[in-house]
Length: 525
Image 1 (spheres, rainbow, N blue to C red):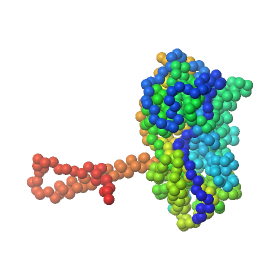
Image 2 (spheres, rainbow, N blue to C red):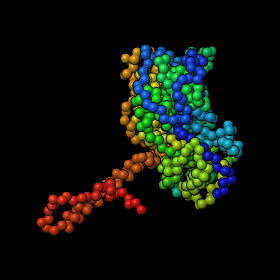
Image 3 (cartoon, one colour):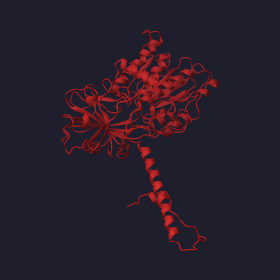
Image 4 (cartoon, helix red, strand yellow):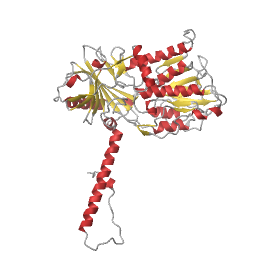
């Protein structure tokens, strides 16, 4: 195997996150368009906690909502609010487009620097499934509009060259031209939904639903009139409600000084995995068993997934584009500052993931075709490890909420969309209510977290699960070690009892037994 192109590298904070656009405050151009007062938190630096925020008077009948994060959950939230005739501004940090985990890099749009023409990679979400009726209705509409299509190629488990295709019990969906094309469609659909809510009138609609990027939101400051958002040293407008549609350290630090302590507490409880993605283009088709197009890798400490983008997206001819994902354990063990991934780390990760791919395919070392392009991407806050398993988080008194896949279930597109829709419903239900009538609409503010399920690369409802998630594996391993230790303890007691002379009885000093956890603990060398 020859690597004919130098490895590219990049860092990504959250595979489900994107944030876009400058906010237009209330009334089109909005208030607070100039430089605002107070400290700015532009670098995700820690801010002091704040007391509970509240607002005088009714919740507005026609609120303007800021949605920080332009992934699937934030875009669906915007779309559902627009269907009710409510205005939103979606802020997204994506340089190449909105989408968060709906992420695609392609030669054609310049998002692959130094790449030969014709390359396309989905480098976050690989596909999704639908089992919930409400989400299936969304997907049916997306499919009818040509935004998504079904991926019918063989997908299954791969171990040491043996491929076991999954039964075709649940359709798999992908973006028609890559996953980001679905996000682009949804951003436009939000505007169309608002036009429908206004009786189809296009005049005066433009600008009421805004999706813009790249734009950081680093502070949401309480005022008696609403939330004043700012980022990069500039005020972004005044908003009646704020939706945090992303997670990780910047989401925590945005919420920390807002005065919504329960919302912030839930964000802080979230634990996220780290994953490496390797985008690699081969000069010729890779020899694969069973014509596989996607595989959940079994028995590898390095690799968890391999997906053939060229087959999945129907890209005939040219280099063959694959996306490889590491295991979460490998991602954590090899995590570095993602804003500046050292070149030597990127090169090592590339070598190790390609070697693991060869082994998983059962190929001899060096048997892969020559590599014409490669790029590593570290997702430092990739997928949720735990979840409160509520539809959304909503503080009606503080007029702030959170949506995302992690809130409802785990790392699935279905959970992301349903959570965005649920939060839109809570916001709409709050409209026009007096503060005394809002308490009953609070949602998920103190719900305990549970372990999230799914595969190493996310949850796929309705699909056969190939292995317990890493956290569950660790728990099972711990339980097995404790059971083994308990058995050893019982056996030792029985042996001691059989070795004791007749008439022996316990004296004043009690026996000291080694706890099962210590028996099972490996010795340090």
